[in-house]
Image (cartoon, each protein chain N blue to C red):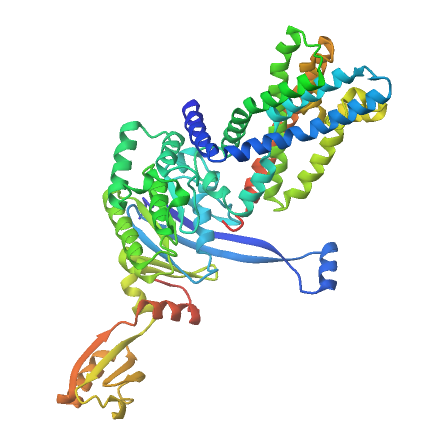
Length: 335
Length: 264
């Protein structure tokens, strides 16, 4: 991958924060001498992203995701390390770079509240120096994809959260950026709006070939959009590879669910086949080692015989895998 | 850049039109202080036989009318806005566009002045008639007033931005800018025309930037200084604009690196 669009090497960001204990004495002491502590928000991460990829950037709160996106978009200067996006060093914030990328934050607004979005779009047209023809076709395309017809002529403050987010997306993409950093793009939105935004991102990526790096706490976003995920925790890279392999690498077990005709699952002793995770009326869920899963399934089918109504073997839910990654803090695995 | 400014102007005028009443109230508020000082000086002058130094009652009226106009034309409130933007993370989207954030402020500033200048002029004409103001303005004074008020506006704007940029280091710029405003209150010619300040204070005032923002252009407009003096004072304005221009460049460059995108 020599033509990486995003190329990050040993990127670090250390914040210096002031700390003090509670109480009057500590407060008075802090007037004279402040205790400062270094916090490693990003502790040396390395990855590359090729053109047109949609990559999920995962990690719990405080993992360093947003800090990384801010460095890649040029808002923050790193403490150490290097990065290049589209061949530019982001934090030099050259106009040529700013004109080709976007950072969309789900909980931030960049539109002027008091005027309709259509007027903000005109301002952005001039700022980004978008030729009239291209501007019209982009606006039409975004209007169609995001169903904005009604929305762009109302003052932004009169829009609902979901409506505003759609308009924000349009504003953020009006200059047809080649790279989009999306930070929690669906946060706070209802399910149907989340689905629409997801569809839009996928469609945008397909139509324009833009490279997308997105963070989200909604695994559905990631599953729907990203073939590849990068997982970071406490500023370090834990996993970088296909989403499909994440479960295999990080959660070396499968989930077998067996449903019994007689509904007597609670009385059946299935501990011999694997770890029983749950027993409900007629249904038992087992966790078994990945390697032995086919063999255990076979034995279950054999042993339960005609009592078995249904059986399924699945990877654990992605949320569970992620949670496991974060709680166990495994060492870096790269696929 | 002209097209960008035009687009920003249109958008800002639209936004401002939603706050017409607020703009007018702000404008009236900015006139109250000079009018109070005017009334006070008129009272003092009358008790001393109608004359203090080179100023009689009608000169005071002309001075404070000019001061109100200059104050409106040079007003800059960036420090307050900017601190808010940094603290709330609102600066981030602006930093990510290929346009320096200062341009948004220039436009906001211009629009405010454009939308308030006419009602202000009406109020000032009314004050002028009430106090029977006497202007000693010659055409040459008027000619010099134009660059002088532009320099003053630039100086107010740039010094405001230097203060505002401190928000990169501390998210409590308010304290610093309040201190700045208090100093301006004494040394800019608000509490009294600079010519009436006691000797040492006058020297200090002319060595500080504040007077070049308000008192200097106001006196030029009133015709209260000779043309050579006006030119000398304008040279002082140029020096301060240059100083603050470079200070701003420097502080901004370092500050943006410092910017930790608080809450952004």
